Amino acid sequence: MALLGVWLLFTDRLISRGSHLREIAGKDEMISHLTKTLEVRDQQVAVRDDQMQKLLANSDLTVQLLQSVAREARRGDLAS
Image (cartoon, rainbow, N blue to C red; front, side, top):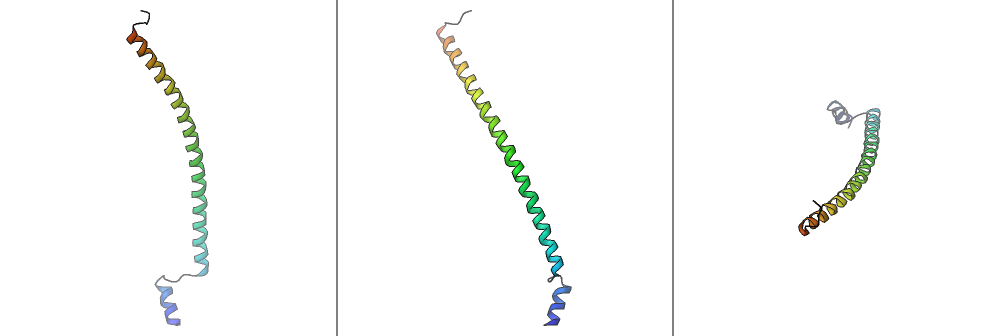
């Protein structure tokens, strides 16, 4: 059994508790960083969505205006 433990240790299939805890701490830091990054990204997406809604509202108004101008032009009611 001891020979198996030595073999696992030398072939890097068995690591010490300290190494294991360092690996876990590194992963926890990475998860924390990615979580913060996602929060910032979500805020940016929310701002972009708000801006897009405002632009779409303005473009709808522009389309309505152009359509009414085109209707009036077909009627011939526009002043020259």
